[in-house]
Image 1 (cartoon, rainbow, N blue to C red):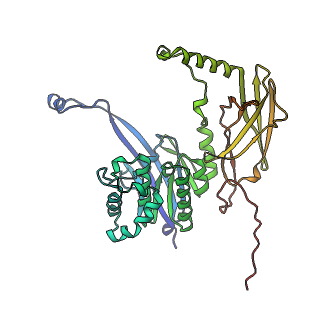
Image 2: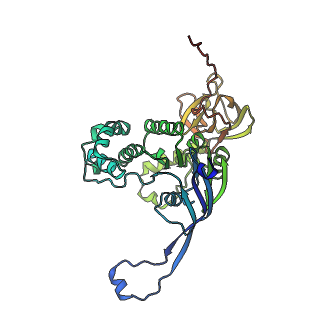
Image 3: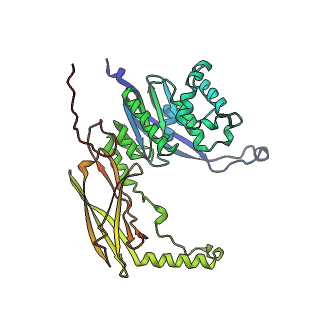
Length: 407
């Protein structure tokens, strides 16, 4: 097999731009009254000289912030847009999961839309009848199938569309943020589907902000920034660069906010009193946590806390992966904390599989009633590296297999 036969997608020198008008005509009258008015435009370069190859059977990741050019690149790969410069070569049948639910009719029932959407994918009625129950079971909305689609929530619509779309028998799939279409149980179905795609050696391009999913499934990845590829290669290294450059606070709603705004006039006296008490409470207590060391075996996090009174307190921390807590620990209740102090927690990272993790819930509690006194505001992500693709979950179970002898 020649090298060209091993390539599923080849992108060579691709650039794409759009014209943004400086003004717009809001009526037919304005076009008639000013037919010769010179209209000016601003050129927006969305993608700039993009080059990469994807091998057949490869699970390929594309990461980048909103506005980096990811969606435009996917639409170019799907044939929705044409490049201004460069060339895109697709070897095989491609199915894009970009705009899920395109072709749905809100006035038809869910059942009718299954057959309509299936027809758009090239299935006949007999095929769809055979697949119908599997589609409904996967989407988990059987009791709603005879309701009109306009009465569905947006999540239900996308879940149904995704369940239909995965029936398409394609060699190449483009997946754009499909993990955001449901709750944890449905996302696990998506993960199982991804695992099936990997086993079947399908070529998959996954666009996601979820670095846990990217590192778990993708063999390689590119990082798009301002329309350019700034990094390509090992998924963990790309994900690490992306995460470091785009630090997120886990609970932004817990951040201190400037409340000296113009809305205080509309607040009741009781609301203002409660806000003042909350501000004073936050000033009385504080907690910070920072990763200070990471080796091949351990990660050490430093925690500092402060209290302006003699409350008995304790510290709790949570470790998460893909937004789900996989481990929690608290300081000893029989050794309550007082005043101000400093702690270190050493985590044995050998117990985890490859992926992105986070010390997500570093919290100071009142011992008496477990009242939350202060929450750490700093993001503390860490990365476990490795290349054992047998291990997909968070916890690293020991290889204690025993093989029975064949008769």
